[in-house]
Length: 545
Image (cartoon, rainbow, N blue to C red; front, side):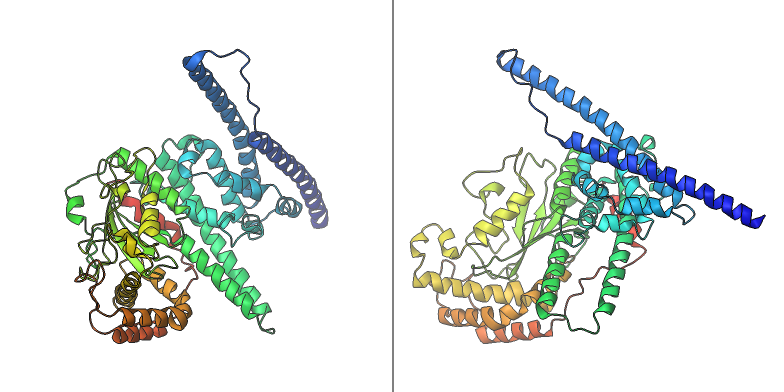
């Protein structure tokens, strides 16, 4: 009887297996076909009815947009049902830690899921919230895939170490969803259906819940793969070029993932934020300002230009601090320069407020546009003549780029001072550069290596100087030392008292060299901490104050 019962069970499972495989195959084919139709370019309807003036054009455009929205909504509905069916099949079969083998093979070998998840999740969270039913269904597909060790490979794909891969996209989205969660309590972050999600904050909370858990599983899987690959290669020596390439990729990934972060700036006293008193007078942020800051910071989380890093206060999103690395070819090369930023309550109608805090404690002027009292002269900030702030188009990213390119990226900064442009290429300009190079070594390198960087930037600063250590020790510092000694303490620059070399060049170079040699390799591996699932929730409780 036992044998007969086992035979019947095997037969029943075989039939069930075949049915599930057939259904899954049909679902995958239908998902691929519908997504292809949805992403295919649509032909324009032309101008068959003739020209009817600007009013007619606006009406026609409005009708066209409305038709497009209706089609998109209908397509989203179909895709939502398909993805719901797929997630239900996977999750129900893995409830008891058992997944039909042939069904798993079919999904694992599918070339559809990864590309389409990548396509959909490249949107910003704000645009996803407008199509929340579809993206909730997609999130549940991700959740179902992450519960199985083999199916998680679909998410990793072939591009797990690149910016375009799903793991990198998920990390960025996790940060973006944290910004939208507002005052959600940790107890509210539980699984919900698309009908139960009524607001953008609830949608962000559901997406954040899935992404936090998914990213944790992805990190564990990648760590396991890395460990096994190290074990397999113990017998053979790894090629130095491969090691350098891996280190470069790891560093690039570290920079990308940490270009924007949430830390305590408003209450930090080392150093105290320049605009703290002004921010203190504003009791609460308007919903309009919060919405704009959420979108703008969320967009910057997708990636800032190389050499620019931003930290936003975890309680006051209008209080920020930026770090800009001096571009190559300028007398600020590889130096780290910090700026305090404040977004007024009327932003974006007015420009942000920005001051430099890397001033050698108010003793050294790095540029004609950077005052020792912190003032930054830029037309986009309204502190200099020229094209100003445009509320509809200007952003904080443009401000940071302008500082990087137009101030810190100039090869001969003497050209920035009105009346001194004719000195470009002269010995006086060369001497001025030598003084600025000493100032960069003293205040934009040594100062932060000895005293530590402002909160939230220390790991980035140490990783940067470790990465550039050989270049600095072998080439840049010796060249800059010679230039600074040649410049001397002459008053032939635009600002003698504010561009004065204090002490000796040798002392600065000696201390900087010692500090660089003491640096330890940065830990670029992410900590596999179970608390990571709740980190974003805990950090964002006060965002919407």
